[in-house]
Amino acid sequence: MSSTRQLKYSKLIQKELGDIFQRDKKGILDNAFITIADVKVSPDLSVAKIYISMMLAKDKQKTLEKINVHKKEIRRALGEKIGKQVRIIPELIFYIDEVEENAQRMDELIRNLNIPPTNKD
Image: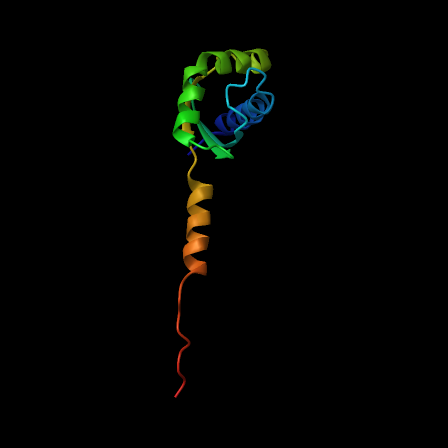
């Protein structure tokens, strides 16, 4: 169960990281459209698990690796944005958010089901 403080912190990080990825000036992401699907912050606010959704990314694993290579720069940019509002800038851990893709896969499976009509006797 997350505290109100954790939830506020999560929303702040989600918004600011979203802005950082939208403005990707250094071209880290190769034009992949990345959204921050969710952020979960540890109770002591020192670690943030960031779940990212990647549209238009050809190789999601490679994009995730690129983000991890540039993690220090991303964290520094986050610090510049929220440093006055928070005491510590959390350690960032990035994950690929599979929820959207799983939902699309389920929709496709349901659409392709061949259910014969029931006979009423």
